[in-house]
Length: 243
Length: 222
Image (cartoon, rainbow over all chains, first blue to last red; front, side, top):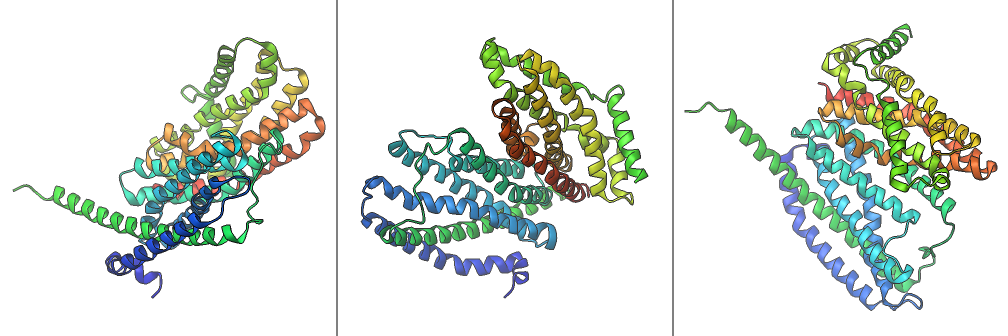
């Protein structure tokens, strides 16, 4: 089974129909396990119970980057290999990625309120997350601006790849900008110094969220394929001569 | 090479003649800068502090708004199809068009900077610094904006969509441009690093912009 075998949408639909229930089940199980473990995790000596926001916040933030990576691979698939499902994958991933980015921003802001005393801080990481969110929204706007999916697909692919080059540059420049303006005003919580009691639930949650993404992505791709078929049928219907 | 030079010359001539609208960008730049004191108040000290940022924002918006027509006019009269079919690589054609556009729309912004600096109570050092950073940074804006202009032509959509797509990509240029201009006023030692990065961004745009614009034109026009 290679990627080319999946080029046939019908085969893709029948395969994902078999896989999806198992994936959804595994996601639900892992999410339940992760949430249970996070609930049992001890309170932080400084942050108290609010440290538990981390178990939702960090996986969301990881996935917001990961989804752009998935879209970039799909964009290459569209432009280079002309894989028929690549643009379906790219289109289905964009709203999911935007949702993960939005959740990361919201949970981060809710976490920031008790910790930093403010909902929003022009901190480098927060700012680059916000810009990433804006770029997701721009990409979705591009998808929605054009009726013909294949034409929109190639434009979105170019923009996704330009974004993939630009996101590290933006991240670097925002880091630089922030250190210039307000050095070390916010105490960052070091990820590497995490205790095992926090690390294991966090990793479980990260895997669970990744599975959640794969499940949602496959389901959204199925919907997109069906939507395109409906559109094709409607256009066929409209072009028939009236009797 | 001669073909590219001819293209640059043609684009400049078309832009300078009636209907080309080459100087609209400068007029817009002037208007945005004039609006600023009404928003923040006629406080000369405050304007002096905000001056580099205001000038950079104005230049960013001006160069973005004029880019809308970079490919659209050629697409309307069909010459873009001829350019796409010519033997010269489309990437080089995009590069030539960007250079021509920068000469008629970007360079006047830099020429106008000293006068606008006067309005914003900037001293000579600060004005020179802003003009220098604009000289190094506006090519990057042109090259990033060109990608958006090519997408807009390929999709037959322009205007706001173009701005929404391109503005986030120009954040690094804005950050380093304003940082270098401010550094030149406050502590001259801090000028080198952001200025070099600004030049690097322009050079990177020189490579990425034509490639991406040509790709979206090639895929969009068929």
